[in-house]
Length: 116
Image 1 (cartoon, rainbow, N blue to C red):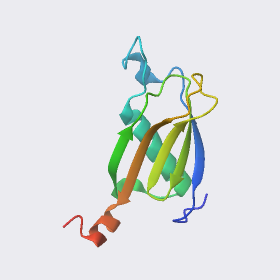
Image 2: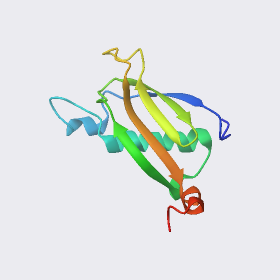
Image 3: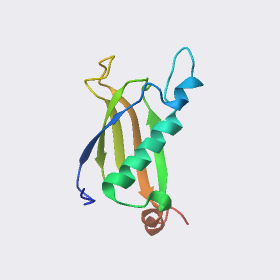
Image 4: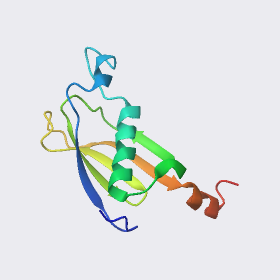
């Protein structure tokens, strides 16, 4: 896929009902931990943009809703920003955003003076 700065990419993540995190988080009300969702986001960006994120910083994260077993999430990426929204095929048919991230490279921060 294109890694052009202005390109907007759309992706889908199907959350497995048997994801290992659900066993302990929380047994009677399983919710995907934010760290697991962030990991999925980072893998998605690396795979689709073809960039190495080891030199990038997560500038902000907002978890706006829970992600449950069997949820289908749609991701909308614009350069430096990733938003997850529950897909219309999600069992609970909610469509509000469940998370949003903003990413910056160390190079961009250093250039702007933010790392000094």
